[in-house]
Image 1 (tube, rainbow, N blue to C red):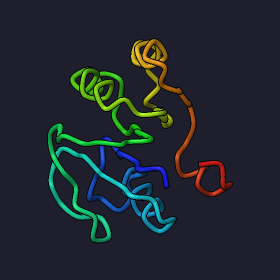
Image 2 (image 1 turned 180 degrees about the vertical axis):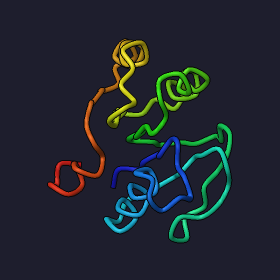
Image 3 (image 1 turned 135 degrees about the horizontal axis):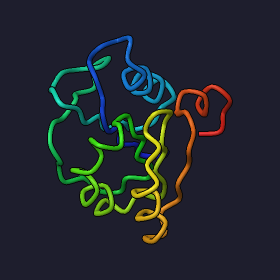
Length: 119
């Protein structure tokens, strides 16, 4: 399965990042949520900061481009196969940096991708 990092995770159940963690978990994906505050989403612990992680297939972003800047090095150091830029997170600078590292870039909605079986 595609081990997925949800960057910008929130404990607020009306946030799309929260729904993404729930849907990914329900779909059997290993999910690692990282947010500004620790907490739980359906039993999955939200981590803070930039924890050491391995074998990340996908990073799905729920941070606006300004907030992403502090994570550039972290995101690229994880060497994911792809980064999904959800609506409102589109960032040409990070997209270019990712492509230069051979990371696939998708401008898409994780929730829609899961719903139509294209995740």
